[in-house]
Length: 145
Image (cartoon, rainbow, N blue to C red):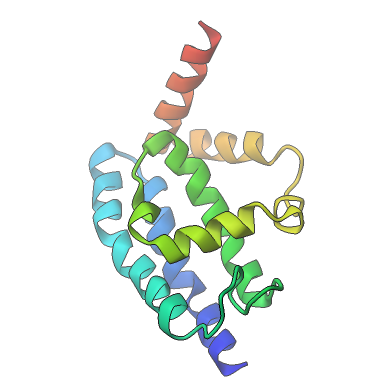
């Protein structure tokens, strides 16, 4: 329980690192966020490798736990954003990537968001005038052609 508590306490640091990549106003800011993000992801990678003590696919083994629920929304949003940014950040962290893939293939996790989640997420990025919104709009324009 103490290990789980420690890793749920790490969520704000981890989520800030990921959102620091896509909650940015310019490409330069995005690149600066991307340069900083691996430190936070690496810490989690090392925890999964050395502290988890199981083969997953989830943090505590075969069943979803509070740690999984705490990280899933941030990993989900990051992967959506990375679909436009193409950072491949998680590719350098195979254990975090495998955990992310397991989480996002679980219907409990994916079913926990509102049906209009993507629309709201994209709308929020546009309203806040983040750099990624220009990429989302460019992609939408290409799809419309």
